[in-house]
Image 1 (cartoon, rainbow, N blue to C red):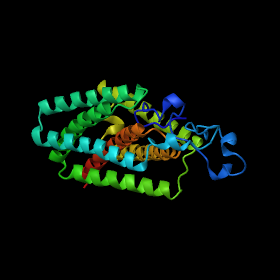
Image 2 (cartoon, rainbow, N blue to C red):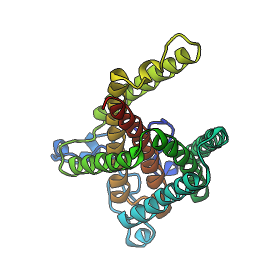
Image 3 (spheres, rainbow, N blue to C red):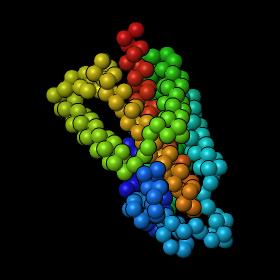
Image 4 (cartoon, rainbow, N blue to C red):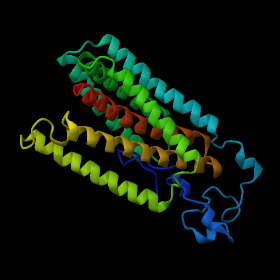
Length: 284
């Protein structure tokens, strides 16, 4: 089982060692006996001596910590923020800026795909993705702000609220990220993306008017809320992946993968939150 973001392409930590995503155990239900023998998802890929055995002391000198994840996530999200501020400041709303935004989004997508299929994390690719994604978000945010004043600020606050609430619920144990939970959530997310792709085609060919399911009306608001809930779901997968990576001794450089995954998810939530704020502003 692997953890995924909305792009369904990011892979988990240490694929060379067989660990491709989050681990679903040990959970309380596996307390009797050896949990690693009972749960196929619970094997420690970083064990140096036997299944589930702790690594030798010399092997722990270059392991990922929460500090590593926090620092690299701050750098990656900071790069997105700097790119967005520069784009907002230097690129006035115009056809040219829209073209640059689309180009930046395509470049960011390509860089994200390349990183997703690489066997090791590349800080250059991840920060490059963050920079171009920031340019896209800056132009997009300025466009929304020109029509719905204050929408980007509200979207930022909303994204922070969703992230904080999701982390609180996850740490409180109200959500248990199990293999079944992930399978169901990913199936729903894939179905959602397929429906959105079909809707885009219908809009492009003039079959659906006013954006179809992505209109700025009540239906569009409902779809936006579903998308944000899916973003929160992906955050729980990210949190579980990070937690297990640290517990099982993932290499330190793979903290970049954690930063990459969190950035992808938070960007997803922000864009959907921006649309949702605009929709509710239209109804005021």
